[in-house]
Length: 116
Image 1 (cartoon, one colour):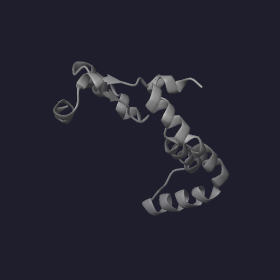
Image 2 (cartoon, helix red, strand yellow):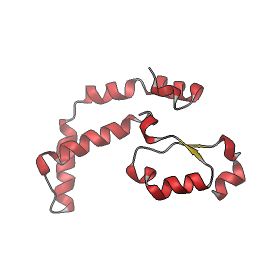
Image 3 (cartoon, one colour):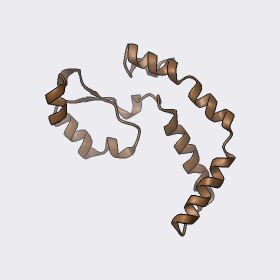
Image 4 (tube, one colour):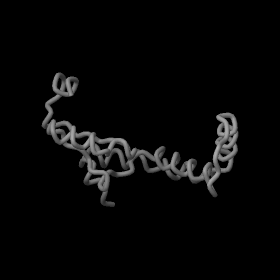
């Protein structure tokens, strides 16, 4: 908050977190409310960062069928193996519309970007 209040008009600040659950924890939301900071509600948070989707896909692939790593090296090998299995064309498609999506968000705000 000291940074925000020192360099920005707080009324114009919109906290737009990624979709990590920790960013929407009760303590965080309480803090934002107590400090009158507007934030993008999780259910309306547009997926403007395809890397989040890619990490989710990779995580699902790595831990498929309840797989668990016994060592960090085992996890590294599994991640490397699963990365090779991801279709690069799917990844390229995920990222292809990002410029248009970000422009829409910049022009209309994050809530407007939720509609197509």
